[in-house]
Amino acid sequence: MKKIKLPYGKFIGEDQFPFIIAEIGNNHNGNFELALKLIRKAKECGVDAVKFQVKDIESSFTRELLDKPYENENSFGHTYREHKEALEFSKDELVKIYDYAKKLEIICFSTPFDIKSVKLLEELNNPIYKISSFHVTDLDLIEEICKTKKPIIMSSGMSTIDELDQAVNLIRKHTEDFAILHCVSIYPTDDHDLNFNVIPTLKNRYNCIVGYSGHERGTVLCTSTILLGCRIIERHFTLDRYMKGPDHASSLEPEGMSLVVKRAKRTFNALGESNKRVLESELNTRKKFRGY
Image (tube, rainbow, N blue to C red; front, side, top):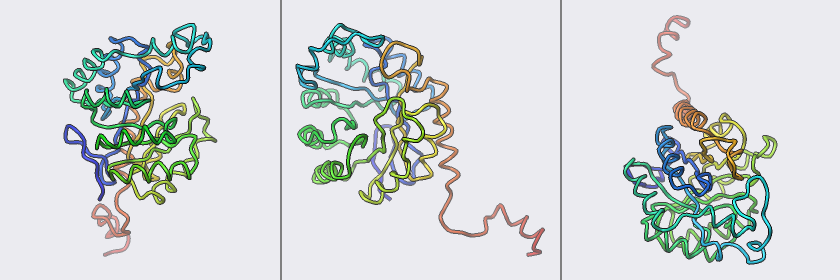
């Protein structure tokens, strides 16, 4: 079976326990100490990896957008530029963040929003690259990520099949070590928009490992995707869903993330095998009621 090898003896594959990612994203609110605490709490929850977002602000967004006023209850600046700059870490801080995760033996990786950020992450020896739903059509960025020869996880939110085909075809020119996550880019996502039936479609169309990046409320539905073939589950992670910031409300707190880890393992264990046969544990019952 296809498997993607990762640090600390971990694998992503059909026959492996689901790979659980705590997406820290911007939930550190630009606070270095909070970022370290989130990593530590994620480790305590039993997840396999934590993920951040890395951006060169001027490269990632248009000047028109960056210059726009951005004043609301979740804003960290008067303009969108000031807001985004407040949420970014320096290279030195990122080095310390990656080193801290290494000390805890938890995989730490990032989503680069631009080519400059890919080059920065290579200096940090970033072990996996995440392509966000926003960047499925940014073929120049995908090409740069492919050149790193690292495993790739790509979300599929707000993308057509044709757009995904183009991105997957480009990735496949470089590597087969990739996975696609079903994703709906609504924060939070209502149940009727989750569209889980797309998961087998992605798996069959691209013949690759599939997973789920969720933004719905609660913990139950994301682990049910394991029954449809998902072997990666990514959920946004926070210490407090009521903190200031745009992603906290659609994130899981430590108690919820711990439940995801436990339910994922239990659901995977319940899959069993595809052959219908009499199980050894059934033999006594069969003898009692059938006499043989």
